[in-house]
Length: 120
Image (cartoon, rainbow, N blue to C red):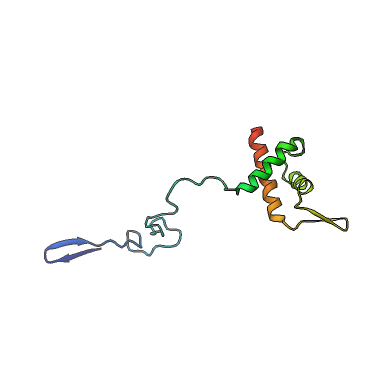
């Protein structure tokens, strides 16, 4: 939008909308983001998932002491994590898992670690 004032021409840009005067929608690349830039995410490319140190430490220790027990299969690794740690508790002959999320994360990291070391 151009505004004339006393012989001088000032250009006033609408930062919240795209050129042409139509309103900016949620998926519009001309929409001003929360970081002050147009478009989506601005910054370095997304890296990998960040795991807590204790998840990595437990998974690597299990792999170091029982290398033949773990492979590229997540379901098998999850069972082995429950057998080899105290995360799975047997009550009345049935396995209960009070820390299921932690066991799943350890098994997932062990699976990714084995696959990465194997090269597949």
